[in-house]
Length: 109
Image 1: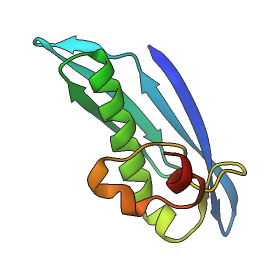
Image 2 (image 1 turned 45 degrees about the vertical axis):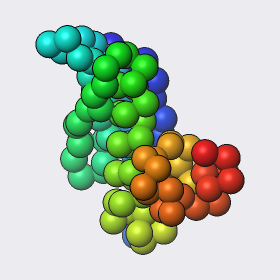
Image 3 (image 1 turned 135 degrees about the vertical axis):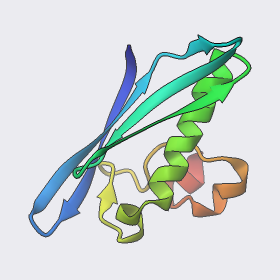
């Protein structure tokens, strides 16, 4: 079950395309917890998950993985991935990747 979604914009030579991110409800998996997510890039969807000791840790792990993957993406490196008027994507990253944050993300996350 999808519990939250966000839509970013990816600008290409042929126009602007939506990049939807879907976050699924955390679920137990052999005693631990996992939280699946999907990033719907224009050319293909990317699915992964974050894990943790409980549902909240799995959710935070998934959010941080999404943030890292967005900042490490080729779309971000070209400067063509945006989220409305916010400078950044509004996702946290792990502590060791905080130097990747830009704009509003660097100020507020």
